[in-house]
Amino acid sequence: MNVYRISLEELASDFIKNPINFVAESDIKVKLVEILKNNLKVENESKTCRVKDDTIKNIPDSYKEDYYKKIQSKPEEEKKEIDRVHTEVSVEKNKRFDVAVFEPTITNIRIRGPNLAKGSKRFEESDLEAAFEVKFIKNKYSVPKKSGGEKGEFDPDYVGIRSDLEALGNLQEVDEKFLAIFSNFNFFFKNAKQKEKDGGDEKIIKRSREAQKKLVREASEKNVDVLYVFPGQERDPWL
Image (tube, rainbow, N blue to C red; front, side, top):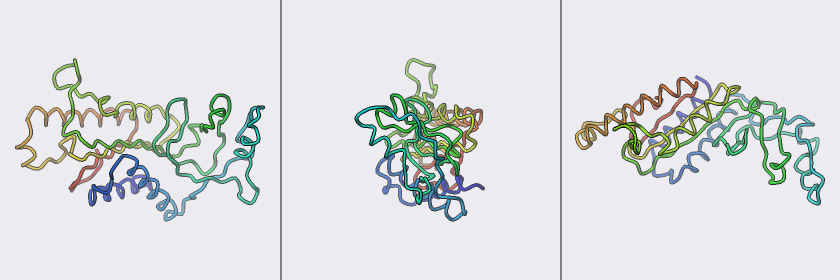
């Protein structure tokens, strides 16, 4: 089992044991970064990656250029290294991945054109070793049906799952891609206890389980592994 699956399972265990400790989605992301950094060290994987000397290019000619040059340059003793694990990593316009792990060497950081003017850093897809999208479904008891659609049809856009899955699926040069879903109320009714089954509407339960199967199929087609976690979970957290 690779370090990324191990790290996600450790994160799942933390959530299952103490879900109240995760107030917002950002808490899950922060914890994932912490676990990844620790586990990369344990596995003797590099925690930092080297940035090639000519990586950052096209510094604009402006009265702010001194700041751009500072972004570009680093003392030789620091070996131009950055952490491998980061949040909100951008590889294309208007799309950032919640958490990403870089390859040991980064070949090209694009901070130029309109992005440089805003101080943004954009990376090449090939420089990512792993990408993660995190979804925290806090207040939904079950899968919603699509408005105006067929009765019982799952609407993944309602909780933002589809856009995350498609973004991961579009990463053709990244082998390790993960969608991590955390639910306060067992959104998919996975391994539901009898009390939960008795108290729920049969149609809603069926719709939620069908939605889970549909998600698994779509994720498999895109080579994305899906983690699904809820309080009190007792079995394998992978879908």
